[in-house]
Image (cartoon, rainbow over all chains, first blue to last red; front, top):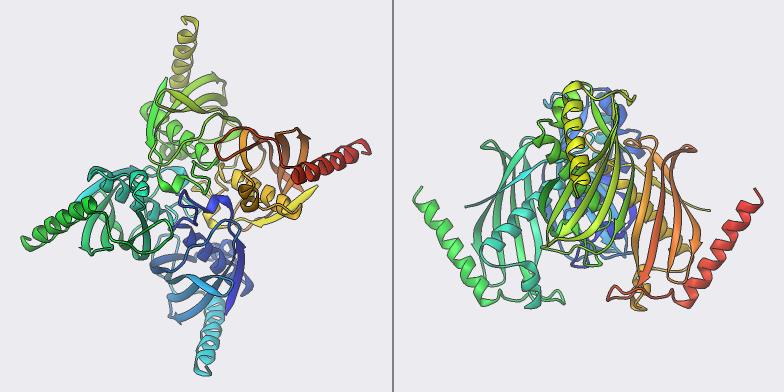
Length: 140
Length: 140
Length: 140
Length: 140
């Protein structure tokens, strides 16, 4: 499972003194971007292959609030991977405790917004991730 | 059903040329805030009664993308209302077409973050809304 | 002088309970966009004429803070207009009192980011605005 | 001179394909926050001493645009430090080239928003920074 650390700045908070609820989606996308980068894929180069990732649907559960100066960790785990879409499970954590849990369904589209299958190199990298994830679940 | 109009500005877009996916949550909260205001409730005065609204969970379905200069409309419909929480259904629409659909579960908490029941005036206003919504569904 | 009304939502605030300092730039851009739209120009159609507006420099003075639920008004006054750039003076006001004052220098560039002169229709509209502004200053 | 690295994510960009102009203020505040943290001061603990930092005015010069995936570096240099306010010079850089230059004037206020002098420990740390900065300028 991939984890990405980040810090809460004043820009992320709201007048309630906590992280604004939409900003967890920013945190989750930063972690997904870094997960892809670590697998060898940058959005800009994917775009040049006429491959864009768009979020189709998501579910978020807010359990506790993050606050200014908190050092968070955001996880990325590939749950399912099809030919042209994938489902990712993510958690925003503070000191090992889950603050927010999300499930994000992402589709691969071309510049015109039409669904297309993942380019081969990324499909292989994702298949590898998915099998690792399944294996680690089976052995638990 | 309450509807709130808004315009897409450059601040709402991303490098994909479309509205950034987290920003639909901003649009939905603006509409919920105006819906409450129209019912006679401002967040600041609720806060003074030790009543805060926090989002507990949400689901979003993205169907089409909004773009710069689009004139959107965001709806608010109370689906269920309990003693201390409610479920709201929302749609972001462009020219009558749904771009994004959301279901948001909101809880009432005190300043310490503990669940508390809605203050009486707001409970009555919400009950009224919920019955209107049910009636309009039944008659459809 | 053009004025654009807007409301402060929770998304605009930070943990200090006030509007986050970068967000005044969003408010000012919304007002500039509506000012241009009222003059008959939308960014999307300007883009199709290979004309983009970019901010070159700005100055902001923060005098008082805006808060949740505040109804603000943002002004736009063209101070100077050259062949390929203009200087705009803006104020964010609450109930007639200035909260934040800004001066924004904007250049016209092509898609490659090179300076270019304003297209004729917009140059004429801006010249008209500038002379109105000068006249109103002279008569004060 | 303090430097803070950061990455450009899709959340930071706009439909022009570049970093949205207000977001440089977020980047600069992140760097200032980390600079203070490295000097031993967190905003939350300053707040408990009834000491808040507010931006009074700023100047920004935009020279080139940052783009998606860029690895930026943001500098912080204390230019002047008085009893209750300071002026900070900042640069956003990409591979050694300056993209954006800013000068930010920050005041120390109490919870009621009234100016107050810096607490002693922070005044000493800032004086130390300012003298280092002057010395490095003199020896250049």
